[in-house]
Length: 465
Ligand SMILES: *Cc1c(COP(=O)(O)O)cnc(C)c1O
Picture 1 (cartoon, protein in one colour):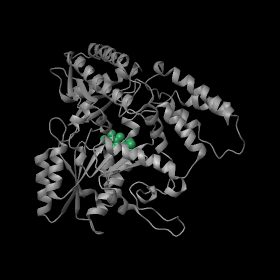
Picture 2: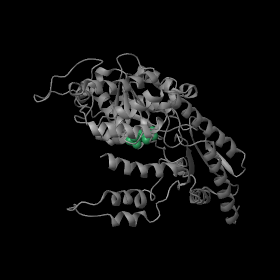
Picture 3: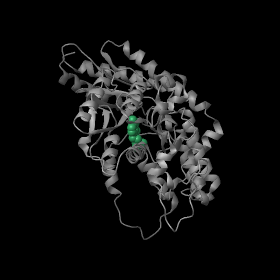
Picture 4: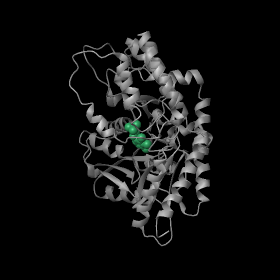
């Protein structure tokens, strides 16, 4: 094992060392490559170095470089090396953390991680933080918990409310949880992409008058489109007045709570009944690390507890948690160690400074872009995500969409940064999301240089400009 780990480490070292000069994304020819890999069950073994060659030399270069500093697309991931070391340890000792009794100390470390997250969000004692595989799963567990807490077994008249900017995983979770798709109400958003409160109020009351049961508001704390944060205080007031469950999807934005600026933007989030956060986004951890925080742990427990004759007796204790009693999983990965090890090793300080830096980098590039005449900022950063596009007089929306699509391609062709687009009210816009712990000022300067160069290229080619 030691020899193999050392061989793998050599490749990892070279990969990490060259990260800054690697393409921000390169999938040219990757489809053909993927097709050549289709094969049957191997009957013979293959030498380890050959397998490492395949992984590191052939497959790795043909990907979105989600670990690199130039990845400003979608929502950047993380991958701090200390978590990889934690995974090596966790997978090697392979302890069972589904029930408390099987590894009491390890289960406690994971419970602590959940407790720290609750502390970050200002949740009271009696709250619980559960580690999940990601934000989609957290949204699902949150909605099921709300449903089982607030609704009878026949819940088909119950309705769910979310803005038109809400992540698709919320509607998907509602449908998987058994709600008819039509019971998920899409509420328009305002000019800064926050849920329109008066429209929400109107729709809730219309539904109630029609004999339906308004039941849950899914609020946004950092949308994937533009990073918009709904008015959480107002939504908390409305949820209380209407007797509704408030779930906040803070998968992208949540961990900005460790910064002072973030706390101001996310004010009121502690009043939510449940919160989705994604450590594999905002805490720079590897993919497969999500979290759901629930204000009243007993609701989560009641929605998920089980009894089986072949399992050991379960605890009903705030400190000693049987994770199988508070989640859909029984056997599960020891995700806690991936979070616990870096937080214990470094403390929260470096995470706070890194997230504050991301906020400042997003503000910086926004201000730089504002100084370019042909560029319009479509969404100012509320946290670290912004949207912009080329806007030229005399061009209709269709022509603008075409030119912006070329603009995005021209930026990405330089391969130093990778940006993605979205649509806002029919407009094609380009997004920048700064969330990687490896993204610093030097890379933002490259982003700006490439945006300027791409702009000149696209405009000089367009006869209308
Ligand atoms: C990423 C994201 C999700 C989905 O989370 P996964 O971890 O990708 O499953 C949900 N909501 C928002 C706002 C997100 O940014």
